[in-house]
Image 1 (cartoon, rainbow, N blue to C red):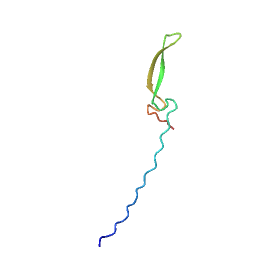
Image 2 (tube, rainbow, N blue to C red; image 1 turned 90 degrees about the horizontal axis):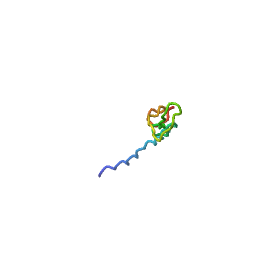
Image 3 (cartoon, rainbow, N blue to C red; image 1 turned 30 degrees about the vertical axis):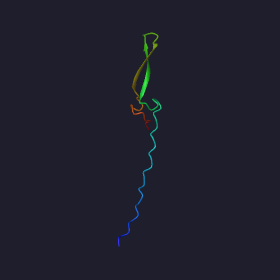
Image 4 (cartoon, rainbow, N blue to C red; image 1 turned 180 degrees about the vertical axis):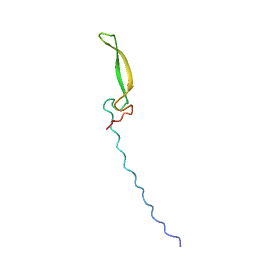
Length: 65
């Protein structure tokens, strides 16, 4: 007589981790954008932009505690 098979146990899956909150300063992109200004007295704004790392989240895009 063949031995009876044991029923297989179901594996439990880990609950999904919630996504970290987005940085409020850069909206989760990790970069900030500034308008380039020219001129010493009036500081006239141009159509050009300068991109830099967000100093709040250091470019990760995730909010810090």
